[in-house]
Image 1: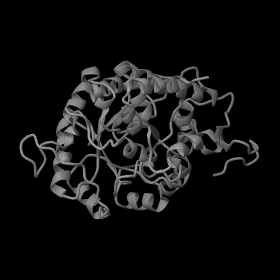
Image 2: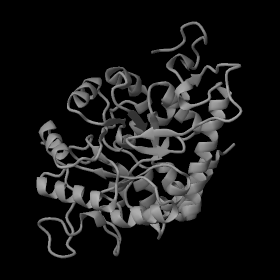
Image 3: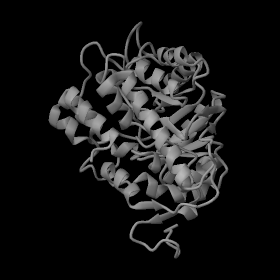
Image 4: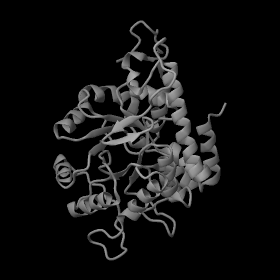
Length: 365
């Protein structure tokens, strides 16, 4: 039986140029990390509690001054106009209509100001975060930060798992290295070192350091989240550095193919942080029950990336709204079945590994 999200993915595949589908769908190397993100959720189960629920659940979460109708937000993904002419604008409107938070990125094919405007045309208080790669030239990073601030973004999501680009063999087979004519990473336009209308490439730097992060934090009052944290010691360092939040992520399996599944890395990160700052997760979330598992293991919220792209490619803004509404409905249903009134009622003692006896110390954590 095909799930609704899988059905959207099949429709997206039929509508997309094969090179563009593989760009979205593919991962690094042998795509082990990509596949494990989903398989790891399938290895987990929830032990429901009984006789303690509520007729109506409160699924809202507060994140860095923003409020989301559910603990599922939209993760940053690149080049939405490859999927649909309305691209990031359609995703922004759908996300705002669903009452949750959009993270738009440096590699968007629509400028950040236009993305925020689209979101707020749907809901005046819509929250949009800006995803950022620290650039080797501090003045370029600062120009991007100022652009996000001016647009009205309410947080910065700094991707830290990409000192170099991942090796994505699907892209190499297709020879997919450049966007089609008329499309560009619009946030990289009109930055220091370019003429009017000029574009810069997004640079990765193996030399990026905590000093660069300190410099970033000194130039903005916006909350700063680090995306791509997998090692608990890095989580401890981030807390010590005053970072506002962490996102446990392996870049959707697109960077280090030897990386673990994110839901398997999550408990150790949550333990290292010990509730001092919020911990989010993305990678492999395909059901509302996946979100519930992640919250039980210590996440405050989860992000979804590829499902949003499948909805966009299959049916534009309507397709994205379908994805987000489905995940919200599934999460609320799972919460009810687990005897929960709010996301805080999902706790680690409710998570077991399939095949291990439930109720006999079955949790591997």
